[in-house]
Amino acid sequence: MSDLQCAARIIVVNPPGLADVAWLASAIHLEKVQAVYAADDVPDSGPVESLADDLGVPSHLGHGDLHDGSTGFGELVDRHRGETVVVVRGGVAADPVLLLVDADGSTEQPIDGLA
Image (cartoon, rainbow, N blue to C red; front, top):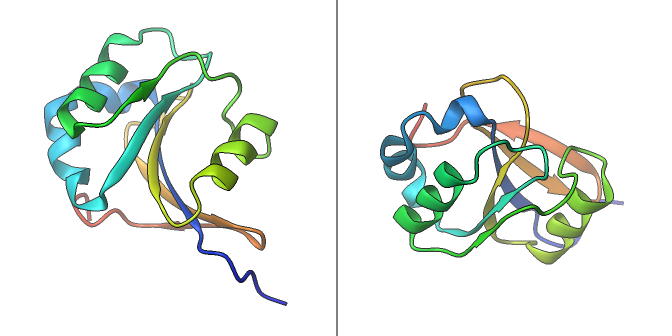
């Protein structure tokens, strides 16, 4: 049986992806981001706050473990079904990734402004 609820749209960004916050904000602005969350493993919250400011949305810092499968990530998915949020978490990938997450799992898709 497929999931009847809308998927949460999670834009995953690692710290290297925050090197040019203004460019990133302009690239994802059409996604209608609702909030920016930062995991505990993000070493510098300054770029996270700048991204949220550039998008005109609230930032939530030190939000625990936000890696796939964690309780914190699952709570964000449940809270933001049908919405788009940015999750900044530790990692080395420079390019942001869009995950569509529902009860059936997650699917990676290109981000319109980055494709």
